[in-house]
Image (spheres, helix red, strand yellow):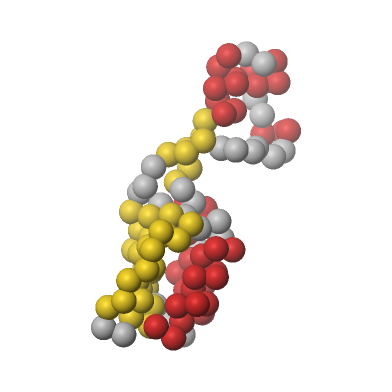
Amino acid sequence: MTIRVTVPDAYMGDVMSDRSTRRGRVQGTDSERGNTIIVANVPLAEVLRYTTQLRSITGGRGYFTMDFAHYDTVRHITGRSSRSSQERNGSEEGRARRNIAVISN
């Protein structure tokens, strides 16, 4: 997901460091009327509870919008129990299913 976070200038450093710790890649910043706009690419899993975090960091003065960016391949899958029998048997379809997943990054 591509997110645009708008926060008062005083909170920019805190929000930038929070984005970095949540697998976000900051694409750029911009200033507008005493606010800083941070544009970043972030996995959807990291955005789901971000409203609460942003309110906590900025004292309720920050907000964000998000847009779908793209699908990406999964680099590492943990947990053997989540694999299907086709993946364990090494079939072509199983390998394809293991290597491609729908994530927003």
